[in-house]
Length: 99
Image 1 (cartoon, rainbow, N blue to C red):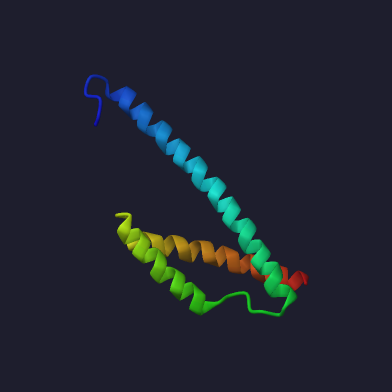
Image 2 (cartoon, one colour):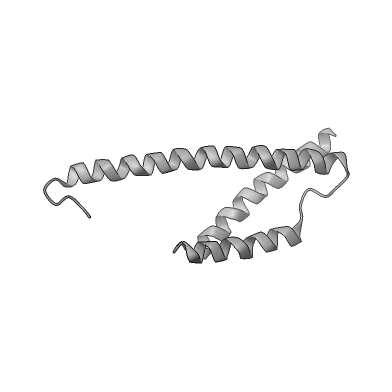
């Protein structure tokens, strides 16, 4: 799979792929946060709690399973989700304070 004749060309090609993937991840995260911000507004308008521990546990189990299927460390997926959810909850609490 690698170009043994010129490893610098292979390195540049791999880095270009990584850069494209990073860009896609950023845009997907932005879309995810647009959706969760709408959830936060909805929760604030209806007096719902900012967090939903049952949903979070369900999502953690689902993402751990997906990570295993994708040959990604499930613990990493769990940490990533926990980080994202903490930011989402912060947004939801801000929406509730502004409501």
